[in-house]
Image (cartoon, rainbow over the protein chains, first blue to last red):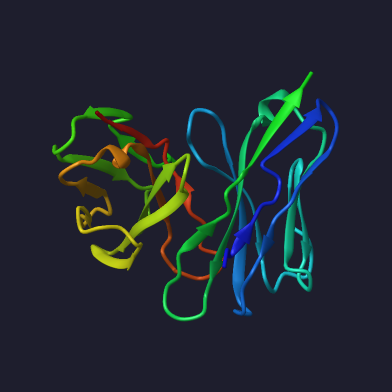
Length: 116
Length: 115
């Protein structure tokens, strides 16, 4: 079973509008971290935002916020006031900490296109 | 602080050859992880090194190997290249605590083409 599911292969948004990228995850581990990365066409993965499983508040970083719904196992990324430079692939990832040192598991990504 | 660097950025090889990719982590980071990214399979974990020891390994054949040096720099090697090895190889570094907050920072990647 997939641990990270991103159901939107592609999303379109107009400049200055907000957009939500969906991410659901599957884990039985009570301790985990959730990450979002942006990958422009150049290829580099850029870290955007982190949410811990025990964090009470949703994470925010500038125009990025994470809508964390633990009971639904959902960690959606919200980008406010989209810019043309936001056009890229976006990956949701999870690190579980059940036994020993764990690795980062990625979803398949969502391609976001921002139009003028 | 300088970011993660990877060399070379682009490589073209032929089937049967071998290749070595290099990664220099962020200063102070002790963990280096390698990923293979292809359009069909997405991002797949290769291995992780921490303090010169392989700590985790993904499901890849033995042709894929790596090592880490005492200064935390890492290399990965692919022997007997196959066409399917054409991919973007990404290196990521982190503090290496292994906890849920252990954030990985990625380099620009090496794009390998096997002809």
